[in-house]
Length: 170
Picture 1: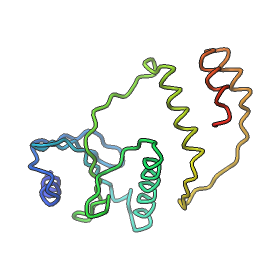
Picture 2: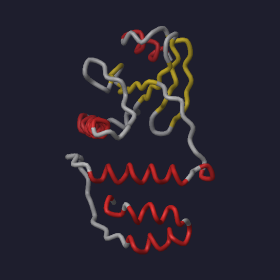
Picture 3: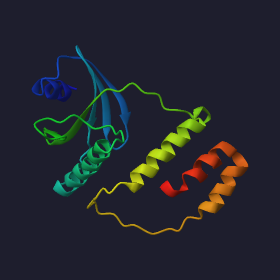
């Protein structure tokens, strides 16, 4: 915890009042409350960023998110310090985000409007000309949209109509 206090002091983010560990998978995530704001601090494990290649890949992912934001697709980006997202402190990498209050929807809470918004955003993302040199292997898969449309028609006619009218965006 002393590391978090030191990072926030070094970056002039305010006096830390409270630190709560909120998630821990491969990396550790903390909510950090200062007198002025709330933040999320993500601490990367040594396995997550082993070398400069790993760091470059993570930075490229952030660049893609920046491009999405510039094209009107909202993404959550960490704060930049001296032009950089990643903070190297005591041989560990960190990202700091402004805290966002949100609720994760349970399956039964998802509405048709949520699905339409998500599908429309995904369609726009696929149409954007964003160049990435991430090391990815792509496999071309032919999708039988007629089969899916028939399935949607049997489940929900409004969803079917929306997808059918916007199939050219997919």
